Image (cartoon, rainbow, N blue to C red; front, side):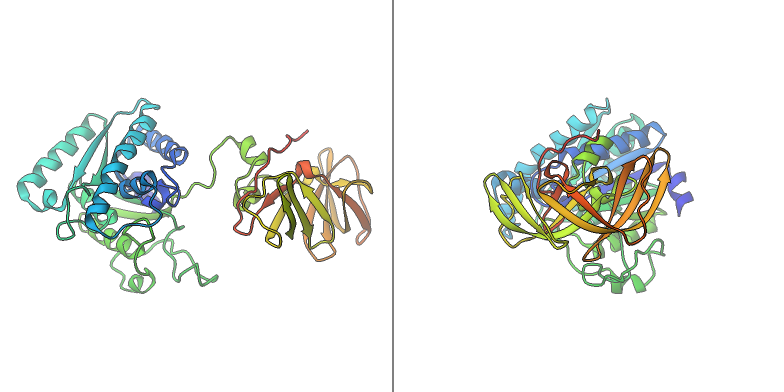
Length: 397
């Protein structure tokens, strides 16, 4: 499949509502900028691009202050009308930052089912592609009815792939891809790396309907892959969620969640489980399962006393010593010298593993008891969903 992707010269890229609006919190322009940078890089490499963008209704819901997707057609159309304004402006400004021209195209089912209008749409799209413009396509939700709508933008993207004779359809989703079981309920679920679109076994694992913001789901993505395959296009269904945007140093020192915190750094950040024992305006006291308490000057607006939390600390911020507000007793495991530093792996009393970075030589005996000091200024706090409870952290010395 990799050779099919690398050899594809015309791509249709579809991005869903949950990704574009950060699960309904409004247009995620930082994420859009990252996707645009990647698409512009593809354009520079000679790839022709068509973008199918969901998000008008979800963006409109956010602007109108609606917490749930409406069911009445006139309310959906009103949300789409409000949201489409911001959606296309966000795409235009993001692409303009990279000196890339864009064009807005709104279509309905009738535009592709009527032969004359189909040929006109194809001619317009081909002209835009030849001019080096990136078409941004969405269903014209403000005028369609249930009887004439595509049903979801996965289907629209597949039909557009057919319309422009694309080599590749890329569907970005808020899941990592298609699994052989529902990963939300089955931790043993495996990601399907490659399969034939017409494999009937995929129907059993594709699941049902979409999320709260969009009309699609994995079933519609499978159907889109089958539609695209009819015109010779390959389909890639891949996770498009961007955990955090920033420079490597920003992400290292200010991770937005546990995934980013554990992803960056070698050795990785150490984690200690605990609970919020006291929450007040000036901060939050954390009682660690490993046996000490630490007060952190963080906003505890998202926490209440008793909530489970995770404390994160980098190897360079674990200090030996018997002074400080939070004393942690650990046992030495293995030490290794790397350059001018020694990395000492230690284990807490309840079995949690940490790594210390010590300048120079430090070789404690296996099982030797050590006292560590945790400093609040260098600790990261994450809530039960893995999101950071923020505070500005000091830079590494």
